[in-house]
Length: 223
Image (cartoon, rainbow, N blue to C red; front, side):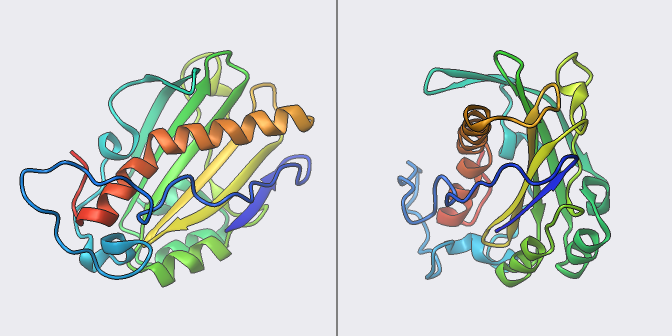
């Protein structure tokens, strides 16, 4: 896990583990018994070889634009399936790491909270192995992070302006990259930092980690 920042210095660090994991996720109901997952924390999702299905925006970010987590409302405003992994990344070191890790897909989506005060972008990179995903995470820095995806609405169009917090973490052969900030680009106080961290956990739990947990357990895409 690597933390970086843009515009105004490092102000926010998210040190928590990923919200869910293959070891703790509840079994999904299927018409046939689940296949036996490879040993290890990430099961099938540890390597692309055992998790070959292509990823999609619908699978990782869902089809509902508005959703609620623990009574807190969020909205997805824009998505992107980048033609090249480079298109979703900033910084030479990160781009080089993605290429070396045989990145073949890069998805992004941007979100806002209901009040329109917290905005952010989440990216998912499909890499060849867990080892390569770790190398991508280590490349993250204050110059190497997911490229904020500005929306067309009046709130998330401001993504990437002012100060923001970035994080690169891994789940098996995937890298999860986030950039979140206050809408006005100001450096948050302790209360604001807690709210941003809460929003990241809420949104990733409701989106990417559901898809990743399913892949870890079944070796196939979440339908």
